[in-house]
Amino acid sequence: MRAFIIEKYKGVLREAEVPEPGVGEHDVLIGIAAAGANQLDEKIRTGQLKAFLPYKLPLVLGHDVAGTVIGVGASVQGFARGDRVYARPRDHRIGGFAQRVAVDEADVAPAPKSIDEALAASLPLVALTAWQALVERGNLQPGHKVLIHAGAGGVGTIAIQLAKHLGAHVVTTASAKNAEFLRALGADQVIDYRTEDFAAELSDFDLVLDSLGGENLAKSLTILRAGGKAIGITGPPTPEFAAENGLNPVMGLVTRALSSKIRRQAKSLGVKYEFLFMAPSGSQLRRIAELVDTGAIKPVVGKTFGFARAPEALGALVEGGLRGKVVITVP
Image (tube, rainbow, N blue to C red; front, top):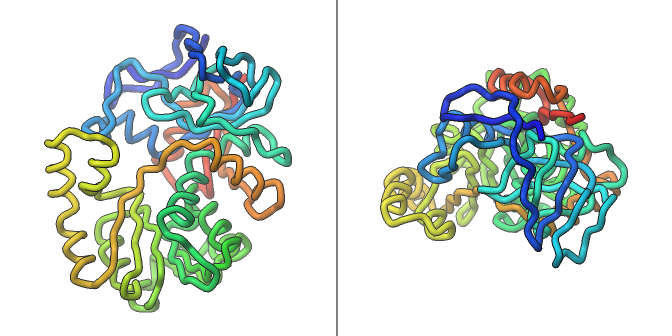
């Protein structure tokens, strides 16, 4: 089958003929109609994550897929040929930039009925990130105050809608040109990061979802109430993350060093910092599909590329400036 691969870190993404995916007894074979492109794909391509997430090369990239079931393993009970599905394949089994992919059935869910495959493919990674940050880790409740950074991005556009659905007071940072767009998604307040200082304007927040890291994360800690929590999806990773993911002791020490400053700051302020690297979950994707079909969440796709233009899709992520996600359609 045709796929887009990298053969070395920092190498070009190129089209190639690759073997058909093997289908295990718990796997669902998906004929891919569309694939979402993510910053995670670019970070893997450039080798930024190889210490935490090493891959054997050559590698087919792609963490979001939507399409049709064309085969199932012997022990699969919940899916059948012809089902419309979407998924975030688990790490070390990614491969969405291809014509077909085999995914563990636990990572797959029926696609939302009300949208097409391109919109469905935009959702899995960012929607699972938003769900796990706001619902699982953040325990966001009606009346809580949440700050979501980079509201016009892939995670931000979904997180704003989910937070509003949960009954929270939602504040986001973005450029002024996106303010009305984000208010329409559910933001109660939009802070222009170019001209305003969110740390000077906000206080007593229950939760911050940070996708920028660095100084932005450090400032975010100062707006939290006592016991409030900042969840970072860019980093730095923590020792707890290393332990949860079974990383070796050396990486445990590395994460401890990388996060020591922000953890000390959080402790001194009486708040919490957690690093989130989202996990695949078919059961959570089922709940997200329900929210899409009831209109609580609307996918946002900034640009769509044909399969042959997959390298341009990654380039568009690097260039930035798009609302929501970048999607690749597969013939």
